[in-house]
Length: 187
View 1: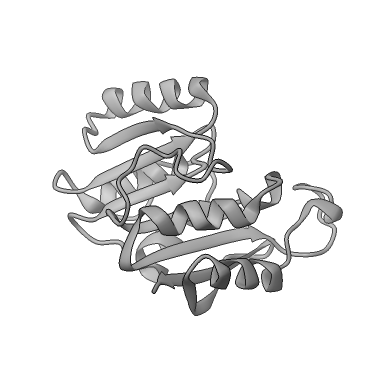
View 2: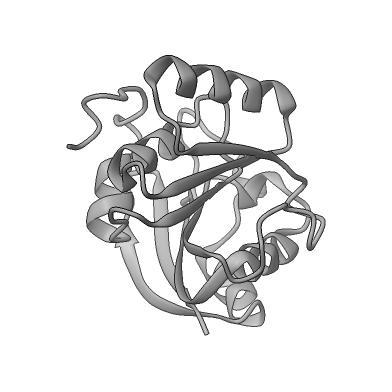
């Protein structure tokens, strides 16, 4: 399928390559796009791949973003996307049951927040044992776009915080020229 149906953003991050080929999202899965962002680009890609028997939780702190995603999902006839308002920096606040998600992802989220350790703990909380978490964030260095270098969170720091949240690293993946990617599994 790929992202032919839902274009917008592949130049920087290839959602199909990251979610389907690298993470292995499959039909019928329960998926959480944590910090789904303005377009819900990754949520829509996942919804396309998991089919009607799966569900994608599109989670964000901005209610306007969530309304836009709801409207777009209705327009596209996707009934497998559920929007959830949450502050990921508040442990336990996300209205998803403990241990209920097969796959979760944090795409360019950690650098924006003051409590990345809490976000990783919250991600782990909602995942089932053996569930997979994809973290993609900005590489160190200066680029013509993206956050300033001092805001970026190093891969080593993400690894350390993930371990503290009960996650083990499965593999590092290529996420493009400007981002790194790490797949973790819940212990």
